[in-house]
Length: 151
Image (cartoon, rainbow, N blue to C red):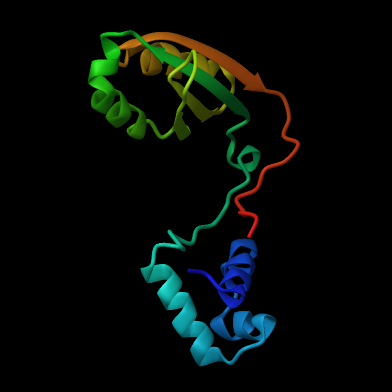
């Protein structure tokens, strides 16, 4: 169970994981050793899954962001593991969610441009066994994007 100090530590680390343990401890109001132990416990407990650099998509040349709703055929649903493995193998797919409702999956995909997405669609996504239908929506601009959970 998380206490208020754990939540403060996680909030700080979500905003800037490059801070030293001493800097985090100071912001939380505790000494460095207990703070380090808490961070280790949070890592070991799976609360902190990893620490990464968040890149600017457009600065690395990935100017198109597409949300694709994928529906599998009734036969395709029996091969869910194959579909999942194929999607995990596509670096263009950043996120994949299983949905309840008229479609089975929602994918967040990035590509250099719409032509690159079209190639990805025809050469990879549409060829995944069991895919019956894909409805793609292109994001024009981003209003909000965060990785920070509201603790």
